[in-house]
Image 1 (tube, helix red, strand yellow):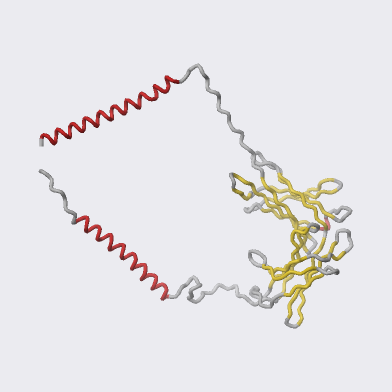
Image 2 (cartoon, helix red, strand yellow):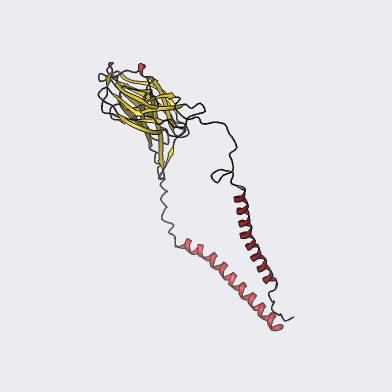
Length: 315
């Protein structure tokens, strides 16, 4: 017993000596490092990096509607550390550029998606000699972001859509007219798409190309789902045209199948939020079997630990 206690005492003293030596070494290192520095040299003041300005990206386009108005649409976003972010609550000013000078039309504050829409009546706008309109979207900038502006030049035009029903055949007649010079001129050989209004994005159902009279006909399916009254909204759209930009016309017709808007409990089915009872019972039994095996394994491990033989110690 005396030899054992002597060995333990020696080990404690050795550990005490090692700890003291380590503390002395740590205290010596800063002093040595300080002694090696040259006090004659003065450290140069750290140069603060100038914070770079954020360069926003401004997207701007126009949509001419059949009700003789024009939507000026702008979107503002910026790239920060490799990721694009939409910029909400930013003031976007819309301006018409004329020969007499710039005429401010108004301003809009961007929404959460960084979008701004300004509607203006076409009659209140001044066209040039060629019947064109020049618009500009301007962001003035601030202390953190640079200014940005975009310009769009379009020619005045009008898009018309007329529903046609012959017996059981449903169709729409589309007409594209150039009204920039004050005289209605049909626009031939232009592709126009026909869409159905939906909650998120319009559903395209066809496309037609205008003839010499500026007209095109597109057939409409008779099994499209509508609202509670069977109404559907038909859209005619001309997108990103080099001369006229974007044009849009709409009409509502009772050509769809009635879809109830009432909230009702759906029957239990595999594709619904209420699965069949047999599926729930099967799932519960399978999960109980799997987790039951885990419980048994943990229980057996605890039993083995309790039955582990302990080494005999010398009292």
